[in-house]
Length: 118
Image (tube, rainbow, N blue to C red; front, side, top):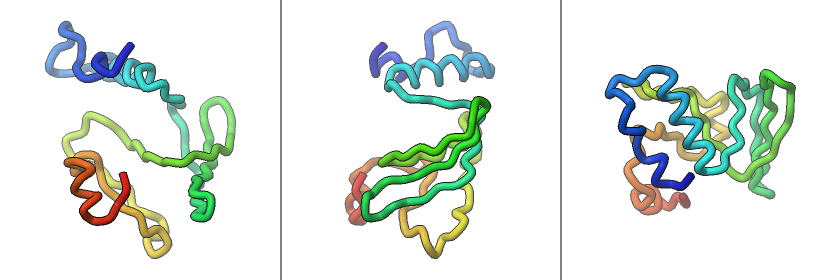
């Protein structure tokens, strides 16, 4: 499966998506980009090590409790909503990064113009 397979829903999918259509498309997307997707997971804590530029996440999944480390963190709170939802940052005085819903993202050049690397 390639990138082009994720750009559109299959031709037999109606305009008004069911949860099964949406779930199948998300599965195709995860497979196309080789993403390690864990459903029904609660993020209990996050921490950024600015020296190593690594995130540490404490997760509670349906299978177990685990800690993972990663370079990048994307918070995905849902899909298919008409109203963008941006969760509040627990300590906004500590986190100085950009917080933006994907609905408002136009292109990386706009962020680069502000000095943000994307």
